[in-house]
Image (tube, rainbow, N blue to C red):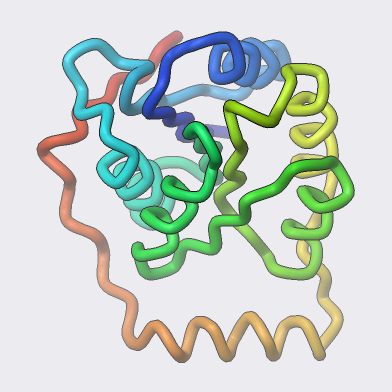
Length: 163
């Protein structure tokens, strides 16, 4: 499974996330400050990860910025993306289960690596509910987005796959 990982700041948290993902045999595509020469601004990083997921080039995305809010807002501008800013494992698992979220956003300022690992365990351990009430809510969001079109590649946010 491929995961798009982006951050506007390089450092311990995104690297810990990368190690966690690779340690579980995920293929990681890196964006922003995690890739030399890329646009590091949070709007570009959030959009690039969102577009990667929306195009089906990655099944999920994980984004980091100082508060996590900016990348969450940016990713949620991409049709088909349901980015969730989470601060604990229960919220991360719930976002996957009840909201069918496909991008996990974290705060670099407020998230220690062990807490991020708990969130990743919960996120990847959860599956979207098939409860008709929740499925109807997700369908309502999808209808509000209008017809889905494949996002055009963002030439300003160069990325590379790291083996």
